[in-house]
Picture 1 (cartoon, rainbow, N blue to C red):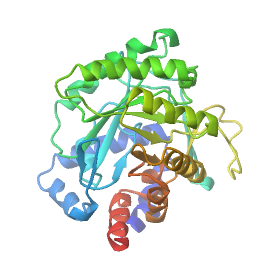
Picture 2 (cartoon, helix red, strand yellow; picture 1 turned 90 degrees about the horizontal axis):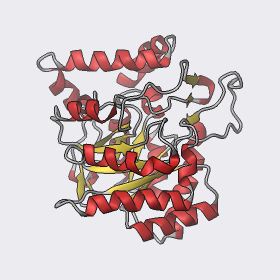
Picture 3 (cartoon, rainbow, N blue to C red; picture 1 turned 180 degrees about the horizontal axis):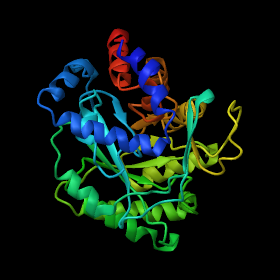
Picture 4 (cartoon, rainbow, N blue to C red; picture 1 turned 60 degrees about the horizontal axis):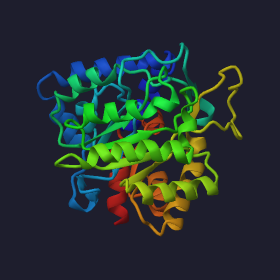
Length: 345
């Protein structure tokens, strides 16, 4: 019933409004609604599925269920408390850069409704470490919170290490795990950092900072769906060398294969949603099988239904994350996936 209401009434209204403005509206609605006494309990009672069989333990962290929100939805850590009440076991905030930055010129996010997809070229727009920390200090949820690390657009790739380590240090006391993001196609020349030498330098530097802490935290790497098998083999090697804790597969894609929507006028950007599903699943499967399941994988890309999530898990993912599927399917998506997982168990 809730899903039907969303698809028939709420989503058509939202989809008539520019996507970035809708995101702002959703944030305000969540914040004001949850300020009303009793609303949080109502949301929690309907959307959360509590069962010990859904619990997952990875990197020394205990997730109440395997479904999370991927980075990009809550860039400045403004909604994570509210989002967790909709049944998500973890929320990944960011991407956070050292200094606040406006990102790329608008318009920069586009819905491809026929394809159940989104193209975005946001460009790491966020309020920087200062804003993220200010909001993370208001943490109330017991859900796992991840921090997605990026660099400022003005920072040269040769100086990128300082940005990644600065965000790591700034967020360390406020999040449970970290993700090094060098695979977003929406920041000029960022993907150059996926080259093995660049990547090893960044990961070794972040790991060095991490190991100096009394309580080191898990560090993951987010990879692109457009890597070939040789590049994925390099990723496996890098995980082994740097001793990071896992992989998030995958980011958005730069490909535009077999789309029904007219997208040519949109220009550059990362494609997410249903067209990414098979591509990300194959990356998960390859990394899992080729590494002999040597490290945990969080699967992202094209998850709209419980079957999509189960496909990722069966391919080798330990957890899954949603973003575009959340926008198209509505707030019941985690509940539906978790209920389906219990039936399968």
